Image (cartoon, rainbow, N blue to C red; front, side, top):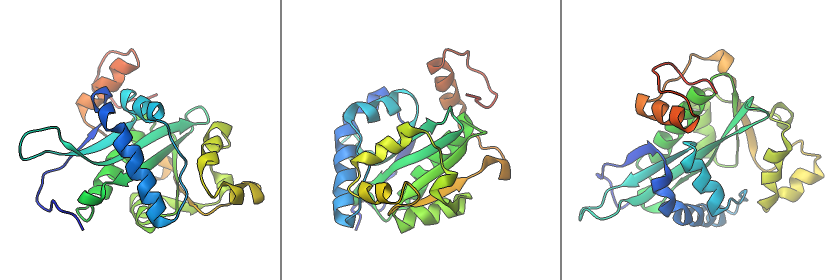
Length: 217
């Protein structure tokens, strides 16, 4: 049960200033997987920190009453595969102290909008074993698919090697595993938009002049 029912939590696109939260994020993800008894694709501190620097991560922060450093409340990140033809939204986690506030959906919505805005023609997919994530994916327009419908980028599948269930993936010839595959096809939906300040930051990261049009990567 959450201990902060009325606290205003900020959900923002992360940057380099948020690297101090990375170890807490990784520990929260690991602890949640142990409680659920499910596997996770393990990520390093540097991997997650890079997502923040590259404007490919969303973080939720809860201000403290005494004005000290905000507390970590939630996180997710995105990655591109197959020459940017596919995008994943991954690592969605909410700290136990802030669950039950609808925070996971806010993070998911922001991550999803960021992915759609940066790569509007890419298919977005998710591998998850969580019923709540499946429900949110369905609400956003994802559909269940087979693993054959996902990217064949070996770099993506290599990330599954850190999961405790990777033997299932190997035994089935990468046709299925414990996780459910879900896919969002942008051709079936209207474009998404994200705030101009984030678009300008992405432009600077990519060496482009800031502008008001949707990003095309």
